[in-house]
Length: 144
Image 1 (tube, helix red, strand yellow):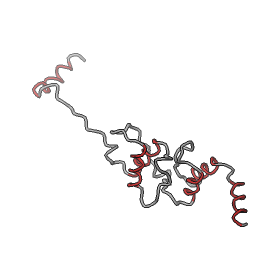
Image 2 (cartoon, one colour):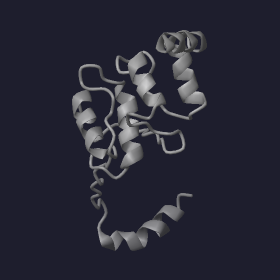
Image 3 (tube, one colour):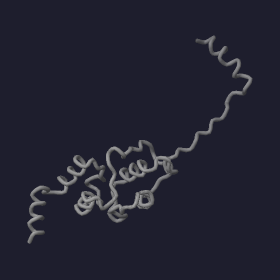
Image 4 (tube, one colour):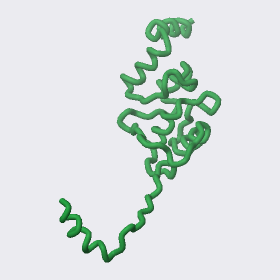
């Protein structure tokens, strides 16, 4: 009977998934997967509110603004996050994944020097021989 009363009170405070999502995002400063993703269920959000699953705070969250060096599938990114996430389960899997951009950003926040983020060094070839480096500024100065 007591559990039933608590559920009614909870439903009055949080009438839908969006309300719980907003509270976790705003009051707890958590960065959650997109609310439209399959991973962002009411069950997942309740686990986040109890901190039973891995969560990341806004102050630790970093955005990766480039393309990945190698294309990765969502399931590969989930496996990588499982290895990097310290000690807690993720609360989702490859069958109900979060959005890919959120996964990439969380992995980047945890380990920005991971090989999937390292860009290859550009190969610069010398187009002008060493002898002409001496004369090049003088030559160019004539045209300025």
